[in-house]
Length: 444
Image 1 (cartoon, rainbow, N blue to C red):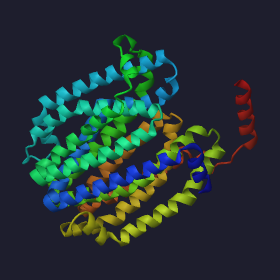
Image 2: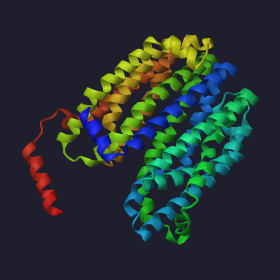
Image 3: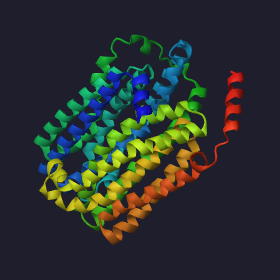
């Protein structure tokens, strides 16, 4: 634990850490208010439809941006003092992203009716929602490009402030739309809220005119496209495949058991998202940069088991408290109508516990650019989640989806342990490691 606090104090500004916590807290509060409004004014059936649209929107956003902006953060930090390379990077991402976004927007707009039949059940018709999404998507993509540039320049304070203001603005717009138009308003808010943040971001970077001047179509670099392609592959797996599988699972529950049960499962997923925000924030703040720094297996093992000894027990106790207080949590976040979802908690919480255990180690895939390991394990997880969900839903109802969540991450954790088994549990050749480090130092 001391190592964690020392790292944050020495390597991350205290104000940034505080603002990050404030940003997470605002997101949770905004989510709770939104969930409450949906539960009271719309009900479980509407909750399920909103969940489908949220998953689809996430997939579309990932596909439209091609995951390029994750790479921008990395390479801008390398090129920010090199105007030529910086111009190539920004120009390449801007034009490739513009092309991808344009194609996706046209496809969604002119195939809105067909997409509606895939995302929603046959008796619903929200074609106009997808046309609104197509019109709003370019603003989201521009916002992501701007965010990634600021992140690459380490403008953490501005980023977090924009996030906080954006969450508050999104909450207000969502509540107004739900109040005025119920389910239709909630669906509209899902597709426009992420794009509204661009208005705030634009004001925040309005004085950075030097960035727009270096965007030139002649600066497009095929070499950079190749380097960024690994981020695209990862985005298409984690950002597209998993949300689409969630839609299929939710629709399977709705078609075979009922939309109310599908709404209960979506509500459980929302609660899971809220408490996982804290642990995800901690991982991105500490685990990922720390894994990127360390080289030897000894340090990797020390960091993983240090996290297990300090953070995981606290997380586990938190999950236990959530389980014991589940009736109270349901009444606060949702309504009495959602009381039947109590039986979903135990397997969801167990699954999330194993999920954290596995993701901590799996961050090494990203830190060390083990892209194919990441892609193969993610594909396995997605397929396992879908197949096991269908199997357990048939025998256990909506609860089967939470059982499948636990089983899938249990198998995923097993595979992660197999990949990193030697580094975590095998003998450490200290002498060899020291010689390697010394050789590397001499080479430098």
